[in-house]
Length: 422
Image (cartoon, rainbow, N blue to C red):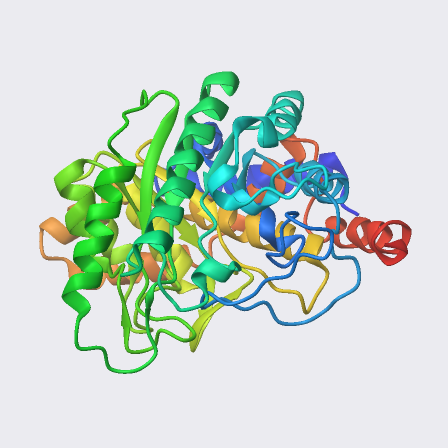
């Protein structure tokens, strides 16, 4: 375990190296205060939710693998886990809730009947913990999603049900934002699509547009609610066509001034979400990110500090868009300690943004604009070996949270004392 003094000394050495490149590390650490990451509640319980005591994830093109001990089975356990995660992270975090995580108190409440009262205890908890909230309609794990269509269903009864659900989610999210005095991003993702070749894509997309128009008919103040829509290339059971494609939602978002959510697991493996950010920001006020790690497909692995995450962070920082991009995580790995998955993923995302902020952008841009491409490439490569880890350690120390590997032992202790007793 490193001492505060040794961490500070290491930071001073790193500071000198970055200063030689005209990068002010103290100023960078101030900018880290602008970065808030939204924790996805579903990592702690494998996307089961609390609608019923024995709720399980089913259908809808998503899948959690593994059964590591310690899954949260009650709201109290989920909150306990989130509070533990928060205690191990520097910087600001918020909590992203799905509608199936309401405090239903064993009352059977169908999705088209949920109300603010079912989430009031979450609002009170968030206020107590100094956290903002985000929200999501849950258009899966329900009998009315079994045929693969929800908001784009040709069955009027089913479509009406889901329209009402999403309307209620927007109302709940707006009230969350009002009470917390902090806008809530309400993100719509639906699993709608076809497993094999469809011949009538057009009608489903026309119905989805009609549903969205109905859903957004009521306006809420943007200081309380931000509306977002999330596309996907394919899903389990919808390999041939997803109704809510990137092109569909991008068009709708631009026309109606809504947020679009870029989930970097929802595109073709060779596509780079980082490259899409500056394009979308030309036409939209804000974006939402769901940061994940896809391995061969949208498999929602724990975020790590890899090239893809680096580019996403770099493009946001280079565009001076930290205040225009809402950052959330979206993965659910049940094959390892879930608290460890949370903390490792959040720290990786934070390191990516720190790495981007430590970049000598003005120098690199000057090289680029003068055609000095060798110099640009050389400096980009050199930045990979600069001591950014020492800067992150100091950032953790300033925030009085475990530094470097120290959090591993703390999580192991929590597993032994809490998780294995569930």
